[in-house]
Image 1: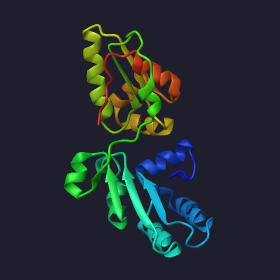
Image 2: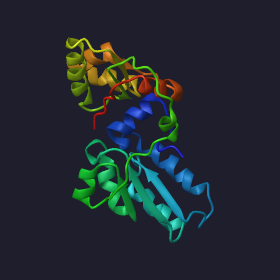
Image 3: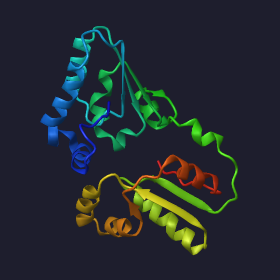
Image 4: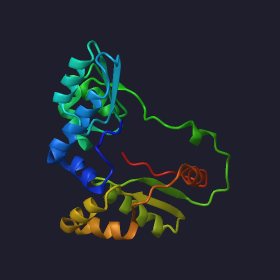
Amino acid sequence: HSDRPDETSLVKAAVRINYRLIGHYVKKYYNDIVDRYPEDFFEKVIVIRGEAVSTEWIGRVRSRYKGVSMTLYLWDTFFYNKNAMNIYKSFDRVLSFDKKDCKEYDLVYRPLFASGYYLNQKEMEKVYDLSFIGTVYSDRYKVLEKIFEEANKLDLSVYIHAYHPSRLITILRGIVDRRFRLFCNKYITYEKLDHDLTAKIISQSKAIVDIN
């Protein structure tokens, strides 16, 4: 199941800011998931990210599925996923890709999941000195902006796919952050790349930009 009631920009924005803004809608969605399956149907439940999960819902899962083992996997840091900080102690096992969080909060380190599809690509002629394919959030854009400016000064060939999932969020943030608005106007796209093109760009790049 998705961790959000739907994929509209409004819901994405509300969940990202604070899921309690649409708390009734989110609560009904998660409760419907639990009600869909009979008692003791699950032995294990894995929650990924948990951006809109509440401790109340975790308690309901445990009540309905007696003896269930619950695991939380975090592919983002606590810094960028505040709700995870509120719920992680309610899980039996918590794994994170971030070594710093693992050390500070006694979590289990587990590297990011990745498709083997990208590991089996043929070598291709290099077209780009560096490329960035990723989601722009928080202050990541400031780092990217500096990298792109330096690359331009050095006359490097750069491929940029700076994705943002919500046009609404970029508009709202752009109102109070002029620098972010200018960055969006220059680089942001709301379209995702398909796997084939992503793999091709990676194979054609000498270096990949990755920002934590």
